Length: 451
View 1 (cartoon, rainbow, N blue to C red):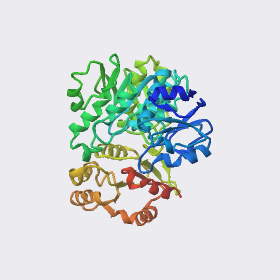
View 2: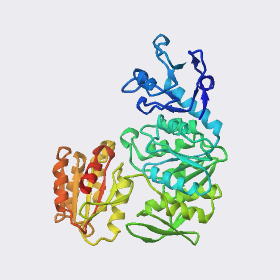
View 3: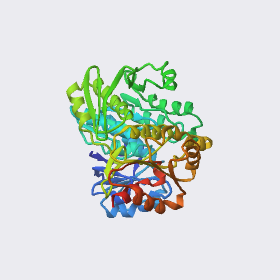
View 4: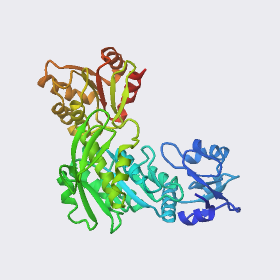
């Protein structure tokens, strides 16, 4: 990007305080990441970004937004005075999006957003210049940041949209104005804030707020909460599922390294296990078809997709045991799907599971954790490690159902003890799955097993 301070001030309805016009070539809100020629955006949060403008100047910033007292504005840098730096940041992203005018694909859901984003980018990149949300930059700061880092000439922009509360996705959708929107699944993530799955469905449907009138909405075929909420949607609605929906898949083979499936008598494969990942692939396929990507290109995109780390990622322990790491986040729907898939995969040795608390489940947390016993039995699993206060519900449920199953429970203060016990127990031919909310830090356990 190349924006003059005059253009930026117009885009954000600000006022340029410096006399000399400058051109910026990038945007950053973290002063540590500033490179020569960047615009610094001092956001107000736990810390006030205005306090770090000196560091931004030191690192090469040519201009800065400013919402504090103009009398305190820095010297030696172009200053654009605005009422609110976050709103100005978002306004600049909207301006750049209009300038570049790519087709925008928005993806949300309680689980699978990032994997679906990765698959969609891989499919569309077979034919178009694409750019996607990097990492987990999917909120009111991360989404405009993604837009402003989009390379010039991008044809398809894939944006992940996350939320904690009602109303948040509406803001993102109105900013991005997507041409295609997809909802992966309605689970229980953030039910503590929203109160029910019905309210979660309402919040996810906010993705249609900015959806183009001639756009496409993609939803799972087996979710009645979404079916009833799309009756009044004027855009095209397509459904997907395993042996159901407008785009229907039949799973042909599944192992640790890949899943093979068919759609409309054509075979496809993804380098991931699980029917839930096939459903993510169906979303990417639907989006590819919408933009006239060929069957061969879709096959290539899905077969060679590179997914973000810690989402259904196979690793090796230091002793050679297989690790299925899915530790970025968790809710009951997602954890159940991972356990069901893991239980079906062949292994030479034992199957072990390390399960940590699923956060933000509210008043039903105990019963929702206990319900994971429906996805565990003493035939498919030989050892279970439970970590965190909320996992007490599952501990008691398993003791009641399978009193002979080896279940080890650890509080949040006992992570080191759990890692030591797990490393001593894990055998070369074993397979172990790890799943829990990101805040529980199971990535440390994964890393410990690899050392």
